[in-house]
Length: 331
Image (cartoon, rainbow, N blue to C red; front, top):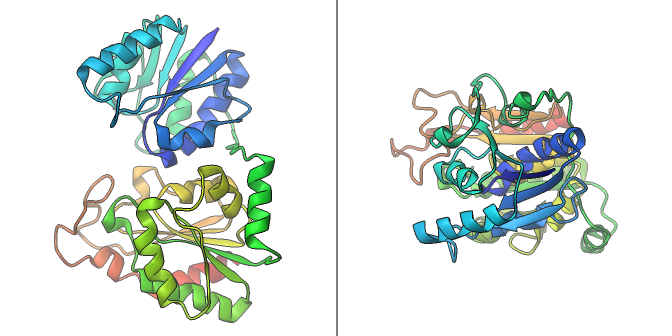
């Protein structure tokens, strides 16, 4: 049997899809292929539940309707028996149809659900990770307590050990996000990190992707203690190796937050324009969400580029003390 899972969203969504991949592999005994985007491929390489990786550069060389049909023709030649689509995307659903697979399963909130042979109800009350696992129900699979596995290689672990030296008390700081309104103020991240260090000692590490470099540099400049700034300098596996070594992780609502939750690292997540009820909070009992309940929240599924009300109260009213108190509770 040959199964394809299509998840071409950002890497946080792919991390939340890992339990689905693992459970499908375990219960179906199928060869498991995952279709992803170039920036998320690294997190899948070497994973024990993944037999093959197919990359779609949907914003680059594979962009456009003609290339979509070409890609569908490529998938058809792979002869997949089953296609699973956790990504709520019309294009992903259409690709499942173009693959020629006789069985295609996805969620009811997918705008392309017409292309599925099995449609699974989207449960608004559940976490997104659990909604993804629900996709396996038509196959008679009811996963229980599937622990997310993030695979890192020996070289990634050695790289992290070499980069961090002998420091044992690490405070992880993740101040970035693709969406600007999901970023808490850099100077407040800096103040929280400095205060934890003054109380407990240790070292702060700043992490994020290449798009977060300017934000991370602002945090570093505002800190009185010298952090280790790895922003834009790691692969996803190296990032994972760093995060798993943290004693606490303070983060915006973003992909690295889901990595920290997967490793059960004590996590303080700061939510502004988004809310926990969307189902994307840290999937870990070892976490706290800090948020300010104001009438205009939420203002979008991901958070807009700018505050629609022009006051940014959802983030500005989250104080250093509130995040610091959450960190104390986690420590």
